[in-house]
Amino acid sequence: MTGQQDTTIINSNPDASGKDPGSSEKQASRNANLFTETPLVRRKRLAENMAKGLFLLMTLLMVIPLILIVTYLFYKAFPVLSFDFLFTNPTHGMRAGGIWAALLGTIYLVIISLLVSAPIGVLAAVYLNEYARENWLTRIINLAVVNLAGVPSIVHALFGVGAFVLFAGMGRSILAASLTLAIMTLPVIIAATKEALGAVPMAFREACWNVGATRWQTIRKIVLPNSISGILTGIILQVSRAAGETAPIMFTGAVFYKAISEGNPFAYGLFDQCMALSMHLFTISTQVPNVPEAIPYATAVVLLGTVLLVNMLAIALRVYLRSRKKW
Amino acid sequence: MGNGKIKIEISNLEVRYDQKEALKGISFDIYENEILAIIGPAQSGKTTLLKVINRTIEFFPDVRVGGTVRIDGENVREMKNVNELRRRIGMVFPLPVGLPLSIYDNVAFAPRAAGIHDREKLDELVERCLKQAALWDEVKDRLDSLGTRLSGGQQQRLTIARALSHQPEILCLDEFSIAVDPVTTMRIEDVLKELRSQMTIILVTNLVQQARRLADRTAFLLNGELIEIGSNEVIFSGSPANKMTYDYVSGIFG
Image (cartoon, rainbow over all chains, first blue to last red):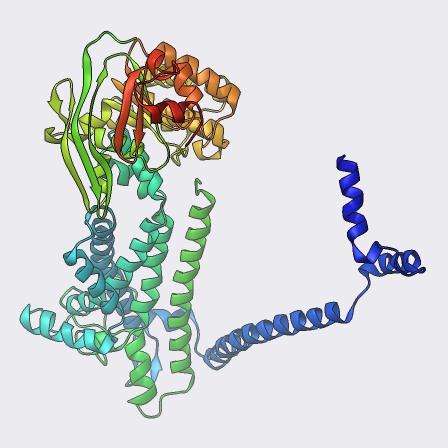
C-alpha cells in the first residue's frame, strides 16, 4: 500500500508526468546537467566572491597602515636604538642620551596603578556578579561602571588633581599619578571581570548550591578557576592603556625632565615625580626644538614595543588558559 | 513502604512568581523511608515544590512563599544555616550538570565543602556513590578525567552520585530519567528501591508508569493544586477518589 502511495506521488510530479513524448530524454539531460552551472548559481558565486573580496580588502586596509607605521618607526629610529638608549638618561636638554628615566617611570606607574585597580576591580566585580541582588542600588552601580569607562582621560586627570594631589595631600607624585591611572582603568577591569564571570554557566553555581556549598566555596572552586583567563586578559589589556595615556599623569605626577641613577630599578620613590614614556614623547616632539629626529621615533618604538610585549603576554596567557578550559 | 513517621510536613504552601501563582496552598505529609512520586503536567508546580524544600527558591527575585514546610518538625524557612539544610537534601534536576572538575572531584565536591578532607574516607565515599548511581564500572579507570566530557546520560548519573555524596536524608529527583537510556533508568530505579531503606525519596516524574513502578504513594498536582495523594494501590487502581486523577494516570488527558 505504501508502495502504491509512493508511485502516486512520483507521478503527480509534473516533470515526470509524461505529458510530452520526449520527457524522459529531457529528464535525462536535466539530470546530467544537475551539477553544471546555471545563471543563478553563477550570480550567487559572483556575489559571494565580491563579498569575500570586500571583507579581505577592509582587513588589509586595517593591517597595512599598522605594518607601515611600525616599519617606518623602526626605520627612523634605527640610528639611536640600542641598549644604551634604554638604560641612560636624556642629556643635553633632551637632544641626546637615552630614555631610562621615562621608561622606568612608565613601568612604575603601570605596576602601581594595576596593583591598586586589579584587586579592587576583580573583587568588586565578584561582588556585583555573584553576591549583589538585582535592586536599584546595584543597577545604579552598574550604570556608573559603564559610564565611568566612557569618561575621557583628561577628566580623570582633573579628578586626580583634586582628589589625590590636593585633597589627599600627595602632591604631584608617582603615587598620585598611579592612583589616577587606577581610577581610569578600574571601571574597565570591573566590566571585563563581570563579563568573564557571567560566562560561567549558572547551572554550575546552582549545582554547587544544591549540595550545600556556600557562595564563597562555589566562587573559589568553580567560578573563578573557569573565568580566570578572561579576567587576566581584561587586566593585562589595561596595562597598554595605562602605559599609553598622557593626560591623566601630566597634571598628577609626570614631569618634563628628571635625572635618576642609571640602571637602578629602584631609582624612584613613591612620592617622587617621574618621567613617563608617553609624556616624554609628547614633550620632545612638540616642546623641545632641534631634537634629532631619531630620538622621538625611538621613544615611540620603545613605548609601542612595551605595549605589544604585554599584549602578546596576554594572548599567550589566554591561549594557555583556554586550552585548560573544562567544558 | 515507610515507617509511618512524618519526615516532611507541608501545610498551606503557596508560591507566587511575580504575576503567576505556582502553588496554591497545598498540604500533605511525606513519610520517612517512602518513595513519593509527584506527577502532573508541566506548570503544575512540581519543581517549585522541590525548590521550596531545599530553599533554592530564594535565588529567584520576586518570589513570595507562604505556608510552611517542616522537616522533622522544624520549619525549613526558619533554619539559620541554609547550607546545612541543603546538605540534608540531595537534588537531581532534569538536565545533567557535570561540574568542570574531574569525575572524582565532582563527587567529592560536596563532602569537601562540608569539611571532609580525609583521602581514604573520600575514596570510599566516591566509589560508593558512583556505584549507587550505576556509573562506577564505566568510569572507575578514569576518575581523574573531566566530568564535563562524559556523555549526557553518564553526566546525569554523575549528578545523581553527587546528590548522594553528602549522604542526604531526603533525595529529590526531578525527571531524572529524561537524559538517561531505558536500561540505565531501570538500574537507577533498582538503586532507588534499595536506597529507600536509608532515606526518603521524592520522585517528580512525567512518566506515569515510572511512578507506578517505583513509588509507595503518588501525589497528583495540577496547576498548583494538589488534586489527590494516596497509595499507589488507590491511585492506579482504576478508581482513585478524583476523576481527574483517573483520567491523567490512564492517559485520557495530560
